[in-house]
Image (cartoon, rainbow, N blue to C red; front, side):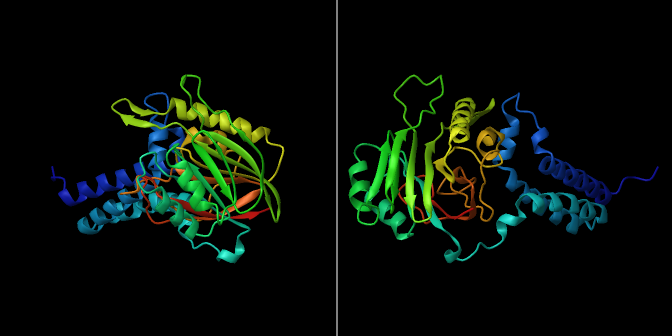
Length: 313
């Protein structure tokens, strides 16, 4: 019997892994969430499967395996279909009706004034902030007021605007299991030059990754409540800004992504700031298009700010 060539064996392994990677990319919704929310965990880091393709490409080239290189066409096609559009450049700044900034400023931020200046320097029309604490709130109000004279704060979330705000109110998105004082939702109407816009600011519960998988029950429940509020909103357009503690591919945010448009261009990985792995700070819209999203330079927070250009339908 002729022994199996190590080159041929490694090529077949690489080809099999390429097919598996393509399957995970193309059919990630089929991965069940019943055990450890593995589906959501995969979807949180789904774009990083592109690194597997790079590694397998190296293996295929080193081993000179035509089978492995041919099989790589499958995950390359799947990744390009899912994420290739995000790599394309966005339109020029003049193409946007509004520029918005979303930032979890961190309740441990030691430089709220510097953070506020950095956000204002981006020149947005709207700024949404989360993790506002009583000691830092006056600093944000004082620093942002010259350019953003209108603002509303409910609990630990706030919205600053160049244009008048009306109908500001608390939005109840607290999961049933949280019994402490917990106010992380805000809804207001912005009287922009293009008409009135309903704006939501939200900070969904955190998720944790452990031995049992992804703990996201409270996040998912809060996303459902927020999705119901958006569905009931009679005003259009609607813009949602927030730290949603999930990526737009994560099925836990389906109550929102099924109802709203997400960014068409830009990855804008925002967390953690030191080495961003995922964009959990989101800008979504209804009857409007989030044309491009990008990160801004780091502040005193463990999140990076994100800025997005929005065009109204």
